[in-house]
Image (cartoon, rainbow over all chains, first blue to last red; front, side, top):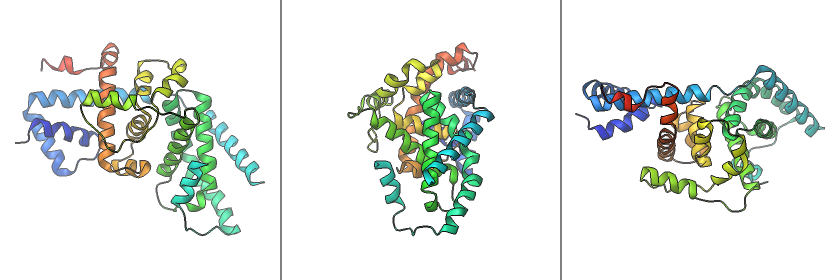
Amino acid sequence: MMDCKTLLHLIQLYLDNEANHEQTELLLKHVNGCNDCRCIYEFETAFRSFMAKKMNEIPVTEQEINDLQNKISEQIQINES
Amino acid sequence: MEDDLALEEEFEGKPPLSEEENQLRKIRFEREFYPHLGALLRFAKTLVKEEELAQDLVQETFIKAFRFMHYFEEGTNAKAWLFKILKNEFYSFYRKRSKEATFSGYAALEEETGEEDGQITMHAQNLSTEIFGQLIGDEMSMAINSLPADYRMTFLLADLEGFSYEELAAIFKVPIGTIRSRLHRARNHLKKQLTAYAKSLGFKTEDEDDGL
């Protein structure tokens, strides 16, 4: 049976998509059988979801991208001439 | 310039391009690099919280990418290469504004986590507050900006852009263990800073799970 301290490490690997098949199976099996670790797992998942949502709220418009691309192209042209 | 020299050194020994190859460089630049412009701009905005500066960092990144593109190996990860240059631009920006860096940010993180990290490089955490403090909008930005520069960049590249440990290790030229350590500490720091904020917005937190 995996100890809970090891699980904390595996949660990070799993949520970072870095856990292999064996580690994933160990993690999910342990989480299903350990109430404390399931709580931690759910909190970590919720927290990452919150962070991702907030970070993706930063606006970048197509117009902004196009304007910057034109600016870069112009500067490259100037540097080349 | 130091970062230019670093790039030159990294690609040292590669032969210069012919005129025909130089023309192909322009076509490849538009095809392979411009599609990542939006991702870099969003990342830069999160990193520095000031639009004009974010645009300047991205512009310099692309100009430098074009300049050194004949050293870029076709078929390798263009996005990771661009972010590597952006990282250098960001550090260069920091260095220009401070002759004396501080470890205070790292010390605070180590105190929080009770760990040490022998691979930490020196970049000034307190400068971000000094330079961008007045532009920060909410608790999320404040928490991210309270991270030391290395930790902030590593965290954002992982969680905003989805780079793998291996890609991050290549971008920062550090072992994968250092990447894991930075992410662990950065997330612990952010959790402490933001748990109350997340709850106020209705997100489920550890406290509420205790009853399960």
